[in-house]
Length: 113
Length: 113
Figure 1 (tube, rainbow over the protein chains, first blue to last red):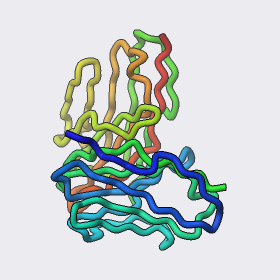
Figure 2 (figure 1 turned 90 degrees about the vertical axis):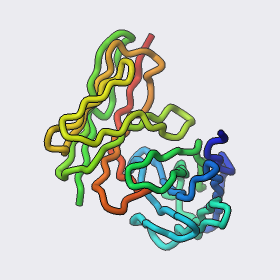
Figure 3 (figure 1 turned 30 degrees about the vertical axis):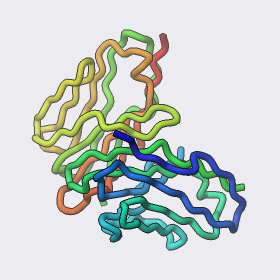
């Protein structure tokens, strides 16, 4: 069974640019969640999509957005990049149950210069 | 707002030693998950505890959920270099959190051969 696939694995951008990250969940999983991981703030929840609808949202500015397609694949976008957006962005897929396991991808490492 | 504390933040030990990691909160949880993240990887679920006072064993790892369901501990017996990683606790408060988890800051464990 293929795991969660995130692309690209690494990318470098400059301030003011925008970036789109992609996540392909495990087959059959309809929930995709996005997290930001930094040394200072740890692992923080961005948003969750279930059946193409945003179901939960974290405390991030509107520059962070996402969407989910009918095949459950998800993308997140960060516009007007700031230095502080440098982080590991992790995607997690699950069946969408309240006590369920999250299956994480290896992440997309974003560096903003 | 739920306050979640993990301790210690860093732990560096020799192979064969025992250790305990703690996860404490001001709130009552409906369940709690422990994840381990190795360098370059996403977090992987180790266990979910649901019942107050519950103890679960996974080979050399013992997980305990506090009677009041506000705290949890992870004990590793005879640690091995393969146990090295970031240990994260993630409580659930029930309801509709689904793919939204609030993670502790984590404990970085290094086991030296």
